[in-house]
Length: 228
Image (cartoon, rainbow, N blue to C red; front, side):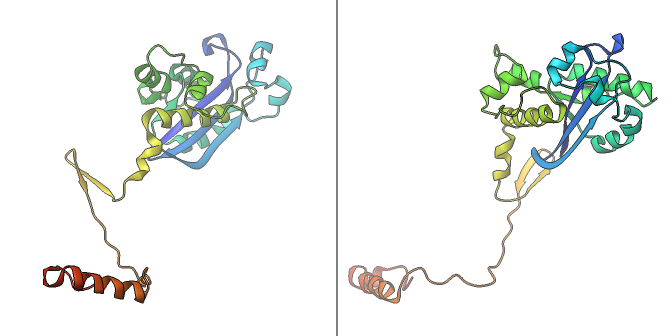
């Protein structure tokens, strides 16, 4: 199963007020493990970046002035996310912003139902806790040392880590045999491989002889085996 952990940085809180995305970050998971594939864009928002927003993510209008427009990266973004579920911390915020950008370039909106919201998972797992990304990282021991400011790719990576902690995804790779799912029944399929070269004996000839002598003396005809 493929999932995309997704985050944005913006110029403000409401696209309806003319605020835009200034950074997109995506991290790919397959079967609840990071693959190492990521996608990141800094974007020219075609407007000023308020100082309050700059204090959050550190992205100034001057820095973003030569960055691409969303319209020039939208196809690469859509190709990367494909039809995968989107894992997002506070999904409603990022979905409304990405849909506002998609509407500007006449692309279909992404339904909120496609999102897996890590805040909602946290509310079920640890009711009454604080659900900010920082607080959840601290709770699950996720390293925050590199997060002096917010960043879409950095926050997507942190979100991926707390998501996997909350769903137990890091332990899912411990199965020792492949699994087939047939009509909701889990069937373990055993696979046998022949070792190409036999392992050398782990006991010496002297130890083998001593064992044989012990068996002959103590058990005699009652033994169920005749050697090692």
